Image (cartoon, rainbow, N blue to C red):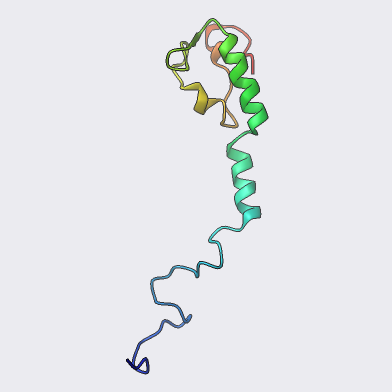
Length: 94
């Protein structure tokens, strides 16, 4: 089969717009920067989760906070979130 008449995209690709697999779409430094702004480290997440487990407002069956209703495995991973004790007039633990 001849490839003489096979059209090619101006960039030499197949025309779908996707980058070649050898080049990641997001550079590791950019991805790491974004992730560090959204998520906390594993150590901080574990510290937060341990504080929640010790709290009287922790629902151990669903790993949820009885004050705000959040699923704490997720909430404790996110930067910018804090303990919900301030919603009932107490000092947040984290």
